[in-house]
Every structure is written in structure tokens, then in C-alpha cells.
Length: 357
Image (cartoon, one colour):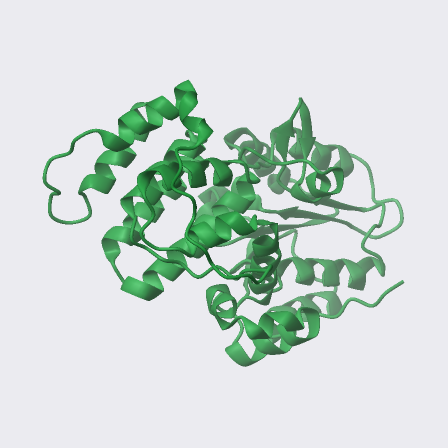
């Protein structure tokens, strides 16, 4: 049995839990809020270890968002084990909340109380959230931990039944300390650490994500002045990536674009793209519109395989032989009026075309 240490840099949050454990006054429901990768999940694991001396106890249930593949539900970790690619947004579904109900209908087997962790509580469907509310009204001999970025991501009626424990971002020194121990090669990529914004987990995840992106995609994004045909080909390659990897790439490009220009219009374009991707819009069309609206932008993704960055081929991709490509070209090449003031312009017109499809 391995020892689970509390997360680094979260002494105030851990102190609250330690007092509750010592006084045997654990709340019936907690809400762990804060940035991804700063220790919320590790704190839940630490608490389970304090209660059960184990993270796979029969009186413990851990729930994560799932996505559908061939009629089956998979978490992202399960998908990785099976070599599957997620092409849709993951959610916590009502069937998973019913597992909680089933567990709570019986007394704890070995412990004095059960522990249920809902990781990614902000992804609950409406039906799942309503079902969870009924559980929180009568939790019985159990403690529930909801993990979400902020309390605003949850229904007010759910928030009011939870004791909120806030986790803060780490200082640069603490991030470096954690990264040096877990992923020392990241020290050579300060851009990735800055992107993490006080989250060691986000920095390590960014490095792992970068390793999954094909070198050709990295080189194409790192090259400025892309012609439209290369944007079409590049969008096809990005669309082939795992859905969560596409969202990460979008976030990383948005961060670097803001660092380079501090342009609110470009920032807004990325926000639009994220909204459409999350709404399961045509992902390839979203990427085409974004890339063609930023033809001169040169990003700096960490290249795992170091080789000279060459300009991508400008040959017309075979994609254009398909009906989808014809639709993309029609959207991208349609004439537009003079860009209006503010956040609009040609880019907004392109994204509006997505909403009409």
C-alpha cells in the first residue's frame, strides 16, 4: 500500500479537511473548486487514503465523464487503454448518478461512511444534475466530493448543499519544483510552463499532448503565411485528432496568440471556435475558418521530434475531391463586406457560416 501525500501548495485546503477528519465532522458534500491540475483530484485521493487507507475501497465510488464509442461508454483513461479516439464531448450521465443511488441504498460494508467522488462535475447533463440533487437531499452515511473549476458551473441548488473548498494556483517556484520531479524535460520549455498558469498538472498534460500531435501538424502551425490550401489540409489533420486533444490545441494556440498580440478580436475568434467545437459542430469546418482567418500567425508549439521547420506543401490536398471539401471552399471563399468595427469582420462571417450548417 503506497502512501499518498497531500498536494503541494494547498495547505489551507488540506488543513480544512484534516480538522474535519480529526473532529469526525466530515460534511455530507464538498465542492472542490480551482484550476485543473493544481491538486483537487489528488486531495480527494488523499482523503480517501485517510479514511480507508486505500483508494480502491468497496465503500468508495469514483465517477468521471464518459463519451460514447460504438454504443459503449468510456472515460478518457479507459479510451487510452483501449487505443480509442474520442470524437465527442465527454459528460457525466444519469446512469452514473444512479450508481451513487444504488451504493447509498445499502449500508457501508467496511467503513463508517461511504465516499463518492464526482470528477468533472461541471459536465453533468441536466438529467444527471437533477438526479444528483435528490441524492444530496438525503446522502445518508456518505460524503460526496464534487470537483469542478468553479461553483458557477453547477446548479445553485447543488452549490447550496456543498461546503466549498477552494484550491489556488501554485507559484512559479512551486510549479517548477513539481515539474522538476515529475517531468524534468519540461524545464527546457518555459512557454509550456507559462501556459500552465500555476498548474503543474496542466504543464505535464501539455507536454504529453504535444507528443501526440503529428510533427507535420506542429511544423505547419509553426510556419507563418499559410496559403488557403494548406489550411484545408491542416484542418483535416487536426480533425483526425482526439476531441480532447483538439480542445487542448485550441487553448494552447489561443494562449500563444494572446501572448503575441493581446488582440481582443483574435481572442474572441478562439472563443467562438471553442463554443462551436463544444456544441459538436463540424469540427473540420471550425478549424478551416479559424486557420484561414489567421493566415499570418506563427505559433511555437514544442516539437518533440526536433527537426528544421520547413514550409508545408502548397499542393491541393486530396480532400478537395470530396463533397465536404467543396463545402469548405465555398464557405472560405465567399465574398465578404468590409469588416465592421469591434470584434466582427471576415472572421465573424466565417464562423457565422458554421452556425448556418
